[in-house]
Image (cartoon, rainbow, N blue to C red; front, side, top):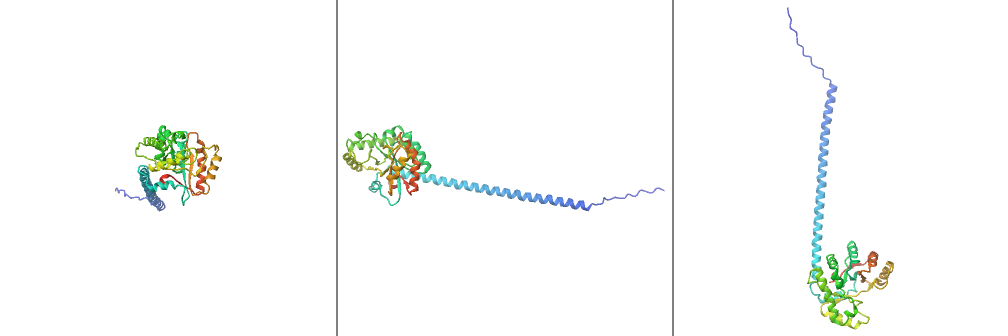
Length: 303
């Protein structure tokens, strides 16, 4: 008699230890995945925050630059109005009283330019130091260096008048010849700036407005110019860069000696072609004036 085989299902015996470790590994993998997901999310969030900060800083900088641009445009408009409108009596008196002040202030002034040999270097330094100055230009030099006149004005410096020729015998024949020299120089300044309405209204007499062989004519011319809305400015301190001082030490000592204890200083220097030493000494002059509490001003500031 045939007996059928009995099929017996043999189930593998589970290794509980292996299962346990497998579960632990799976849990660890899941935990690491969650951890790295959180880390990635946190890193992404930090990147977004950093990006927002950079964008906000960029917006702040953009607003600042726009505000600076608007201020600069407003300042230029104010400056332009001061050299296009006639001086009031109050403004004339302010210029004439430039040597008196309750605050310590200094007006850096440069005569006999502009010249390619010196003026650009002075302008570079003034820009670096954030200082504005007053340039008493010669018409003969403005005629051949219009781009320097443009730069002086664009960078906020005051362009004043120092005659056309600087030749005493030609200028000081009479009051009218003084005015003629002034007007000729104004014409070349206007042409350089492409602005027929520009009027400096401030004249520095070559050699100063007092003393010397032409003293009588100078005094008459000073009154004649004033009647025509033009005031004159001399100086009360100088480097003597046009009087034989030929070292940086000598120029600086002349400035120190002539500035003395004055509250309001109008400092005479030159930017003629042979005055590179003035440029080379200027950083020391500026430092001395700063160390002694002077604030740098231009004619714009008192008009």
